[in-house]
Length: 336
Image (cartoon, rainbow, N blue to C red):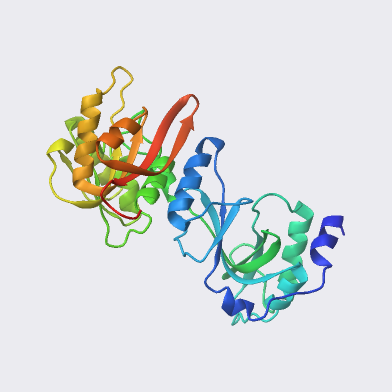
C-alpha cells in the first residue's frame, strides 16, 4: 500500500456521531474552469453560494440544481464524513439498498489523491456495502471525496452540460457571448429565480435569453436591430422555446422588472458615444433595480452618473479580448 494510503486509511476510525442526520442538507460541489474564466466562476459562486471554491470544491447547505452552473462538474449530497476511509466504509456498511445495484466513484477536487488511492478508496467502501455492484448502469450512485482535510461520502451526480447544445444556433454571431459566459451571468444576475422577472433589452441573437429560458427563468428580450430580433426568434424556435423578444429601443421600453441584463453593444468598427452609453444605463436603471452589465470598455464613471452602485465585478478574457461583468443596483436601493 502506498504511503499516501497509509496516511489516509490507517488512522483511528472517527465517524462523527449522528453524521447522517447532521449533514443531510450539505452538499459538495466540485468545480472546474479555464483560467480565462476563473474570475467569472468565482463571481458566479459568490452569487449562488455566498462563497468561493477552495481546493477545487465548495461545501454549502444551499441546494443548487446540478447543470445550472457551467463550472460545477459534480454534486455530492453529503451523508457522512470522517478522518479516514475506514470510517466512511463503516458508515456505508449500514446503507439499505432494497436490492438496488450500486457503484462507488471517487470525486476528484484538487488532484491531491493519487490514482491508486482513489481506486483503493472505491474498493474499500464498495466492499462494505451490502448489495450488488454494477459498474455500467447502477441504480444507486455513491461518491467519495477527500476535501478540506476530511473524507466525505454520499449520493453523487455528474453535471450534464445542457448549454453545449445551445452552441448549435442557426443564427450565430461572432462577437456574441459564449453559452458558458451567458449562463454564468444569468446565474449572477438571478441567483434565486423564483418569482423574478428579467429583461434583456439588448438581446442580440438571444444568447442570454436562451440560457435563462432553459433554466426556467421568466425573461423577455428586446433589441433595436430588426436583423438581431429575427435571428433571436429563429434561434429560440430552433430550441423549442417561446418567442419572448420584440423590436424596440431600450430607451423607450416601459414597465418594471426585478433584474435587467444589459450586454452593451460592441462593434469592431465603431464605438458607442459616452452620451449614448449613459442614456442606455439610465434606461436600464429605470427598468430594474438590479442590473448585470457586460461591457468591453471602462464604464465606471457612466455607472455612477446613472445612479448605480457596483456590487461585484470580474473580467472575462478570451485571448487579448476582455469583457467586464458588473453587477449593479440602484443607488437608492438597500441590500444586494
